[in-house]
Image 1 (cartoon, rainbow, N blue to C red):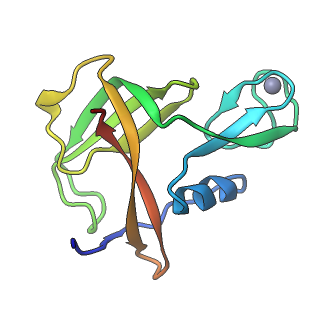
Image 2 (image 1 turned 30 degrees about the vertical axis):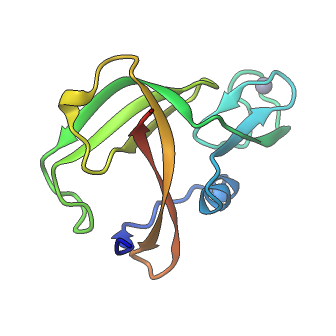
Amino acid sequence: MSEIKVRPAPARGMFDGPLWEAVDKGEFRLQRCSECGFVRYPPAGVCPRCLSENCKWDLMSGRGRVMSWCVFYRQYFPEIPPPNLVVLAELEEGPIIVADIPGGDASQLKLDLPVRLVFEPVKWNDGTEGKIFHWSLAK
Ligand SMILES: [Zn+2]
């Protein structure tokens, strides 16, 4: 069994609570507007399309397609050694999600490549524990 990694605790916005509670359960949930159906990310107090405050936290498919990527060779956090492959992918439901592929190889990526969100237990650097999400090459 691999050792649980320490990661920098995410900076949480005032509307992010339900997102991280879902991630801790191994689910990816985002706000879907109850009026127009728009799925928004990052979490917000109102729908950016129709300004409704009504929404529900819907379970997302976790399936996406690669739109772009970059490799960080500079180390920004002591817990994340370079190189770090970071992928920007569009979820089937519409929102664009940025997440890394730990140990990923950028030469395997291409536009529209299917990817899926996966979850990993972590220790946050504030001493708490939870899960983090990454992109993974879809099989
Ligand atoms: Zn709306």
